[in-house]
Length: 344
Image (cartoon, rainbow, N blue to C red; front, top):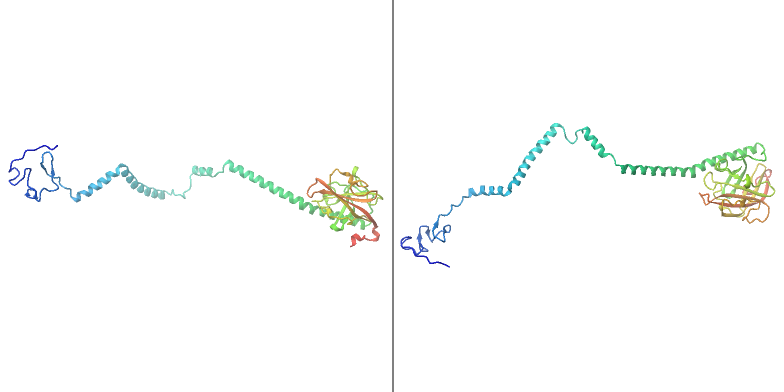
């Protein structure tokens, strides 16, 4: 609530003043038009107070800058100082490094060189992977060399040996050197001609791999239970074996023979001409009955003069045997010249 206050005596504030001071709109000590805005009035005493002097503009700027620096705080000042000193320190450090020669291209100390060498050294896993890779590469190269040896070099060497044996045999025949009637294992005694396959290969006694078959020749079954007749026998089965692949591969394409195709055996005195009769595409290696005087599964029903060619099948394996049979149709002395099968 608002309390009543006693009026002041006239003349205390002037004759024309109101109850509490100079009249509004009059002229007073503070100038015309009433009190100044900057004057402050005490509500309790209604006394006048002298206003604080307003700061000059030139004094405000330092205060604001000081306020800004204070507002930045100690952390900002430290950061600014550190940046200034850091730049100067960096420049001094770079200049000192350039003066002392410790740049990036400077030579390393022994300790640093060893440390870098250890860092560059590969780990155990890398070494193991490299070793395994080298083993596989070496194994692959060895396998490739082995295949090349088996499929190419053995043929080259065996064909050269077979050609030499055939040439020596023909030279002996031309010189009149007589055959002994029986032959040593590995000794050549005849030539086999298969005109359709363009095959001319020497026939040697026995079927030993190192002495006969691997040298590119055809072997005669002449030992033990596998012994077969010679071509000049009156009856019997002349059995021959040869490689189908590698080592000259003289029997590689005998599966292409057809009934009636000629097979000729040339000896020192005679030509024995056979006609292909039948084929057994697959049989077990233990089926020795194909070499009987009257071979089983050949289609022959009685004694005669037969020839049997045996080789491995399928190609590049020795799991089974391929059998080709022929029957003699002509015996021709060499004095009468070559048979028609070798002339045409």
